[in-house]
Image (tube, rainbow, N blue to C red; front, side, top):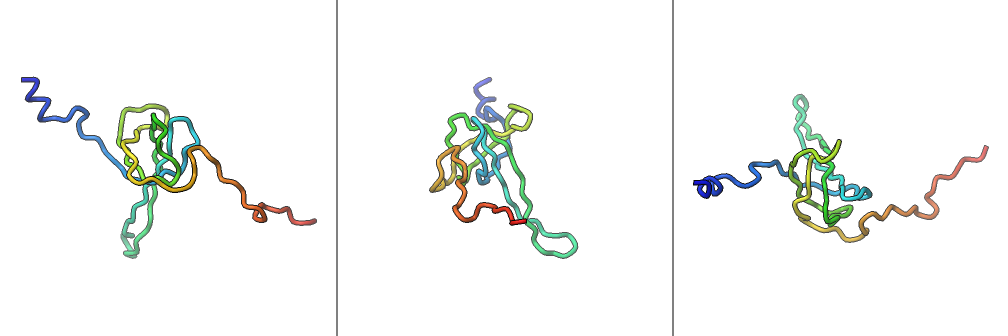
Length: 114
């Protein structure tokens, strides 16, 4: 009887999933995922972009900045983390995990002479 019940319901139940782009990977085993969606303005009808940020647990530290990933809801892991990485949908070309932006020569902020 327990075997039949396990076939009907998945082991983890229904969990929300989100696809988004990794915008930060500087923390240990944590990534920040941004999801952008278009919403129609109720009065003017113009489409507005709305973004949401999710902190997700990345145990293997597989995702890096620019990757498109799928995350799913989980129990609270810390004050902000309520999501975990399911898979990397599309890997980005370029930066290595944890590498910070390097300032471009000539574009640094220069103080104005007084």
